[in-house]
Structure formats: structure tokens, C-alpha cells
Image: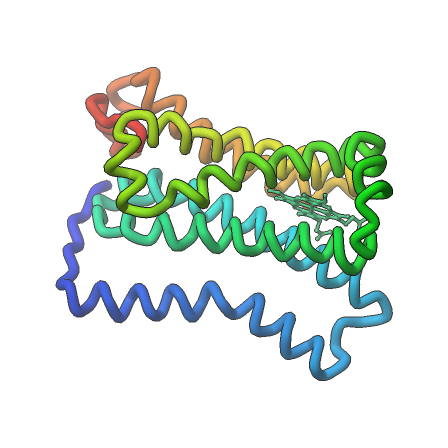
Length: 217
Ligand code: HEM
């Protein structure tokens, strides 16, 4: 299934600029809709929901890089991972800022009461707090300095994404279809890693390009 597709440095730069532009579209649309009164009857809810949704989507895309790289053999995909992870953090920061600014009007006492009171906020907040050390240590210097500990620290992304899905599942009142779809995608991405780790079945490993020697980054 693995088909090698190498790219030159100049092609990579173009691809990276295109990926950067594509990742900026959700935010650009949000700003555009804000300026053109296109955020609907409840703009705060629209911004909160949009930034929350894109946080989760970027988390899942970031988690998709390793399986896709293994399956296709496109090693260069790994170079996009940091950018995607930082987009997830940026969306989470906007999401959290919308909550403390537009939703709670910087009422710190109210926020301190709300976080433990509503379980979906508790889980969302925990996921956001865990994202901070990952963003701070995303630089090449930090990767070098932390060495093996960097990989261990960045495994927190699994917990963060699980927290993001639970947060979504707990906030929806009746129709749980959307959070369950995100949960199923996350389950597949984490399941792939477990198969790779446990080296389940040689056939399965070959079929899905799971190298038994492969280690998690
Ligand atoms: C990694 C962290 C987080 C992720 C992945 C995340 C994800 C989401 C998602 C997917 C939604 C629903 C979007 C939709 O309805 O389409 C949402 C809504 C929401 N989130 Fe988060 N969230 C995170 C952190 C937080 C934090 C830190 C807070 C506040 C402390 C927060 C407060 C909210 C609120 C108030 C809503 C809207 C609830 C409603 O409309 O009833 N989230 N979030």
C-alpha cells in the first residue's frame, strides 16, 4: 500500500504556504462574517461553537499525520504536524478567550465557579490547560532540549483529544450524532496507534503499512 512520493524543497515550501492558507480559511470566514453581520442571531454562540469545532478538527488532523505518513510512505507529511498542532492551540485560545471575554465578561469569580460546576466546561478547560505545555514546547530548540521527554510530553495530545470529544458529548443536549462521529474518527486514529504498538498480526501490519519496528513520534 505504501507508495513513495518525495518532494523537493521548493515544492515543500509551496505546499506549506498552501496548507497555511487553507488552515486560515475558517478564521478568515469568521472575521468576514463578523464584519458583514453574518454570524446569525447569536454571534457569541456562533464564535464559541465555530472555534470549538475547529479546535477539535485541527486536533484530529494533527493526530492523522502519523497514520497517513505510515500508510502512504510520504515522510514529508511530518513537517506539517507542528503547524497543524499550533492551529489547534490557536483555535482553542480563541475559543477560551470568547468564553472568558464575550460569555463571562472577565468575571473571574463567576468563571472560577463555572469551571468546576459544569462538567463539560471542566473537561474543556482541562484539555485547554494541557495544550499549553505542548504549544510552548513546539519549537525545534525545545524538541532538541527535551529529547525523549518531548515525545512523552506530547503524548498528552491523546488525552486532550479524548477530553475534547467528551466536552462536546457532554454539552450537546439531545442529538449526540456529531460528537460521536468525532469520537469514532478519534477512536480509529488511536486504534491505529495501538495496533502499531502491539504489532497485531503480520498481515494487518503489512496491509496498513504498520512497520513492527515503527515507534511513535
Ligand atoms: C481542547 C479544548 C477544547 C475543545 C476541543 C473544545 C471543543 C468544543 C466543541 C467541538 C464545541 C461544540 C461546537 C459545536 O456545537 O459545533 C464546544 C463548545 C463550547 N465550548 Fe469548548 N472546547 C475546548 C475547550 C473549552 C474551554 C476551555 C471552554 C471554557 C472554559 C469551553 C467552552 C465551551 C462552550 C461554552 C461551548 C458552547 C456550549 C453551548 O453552545 O452550549 N471549551 N467546544
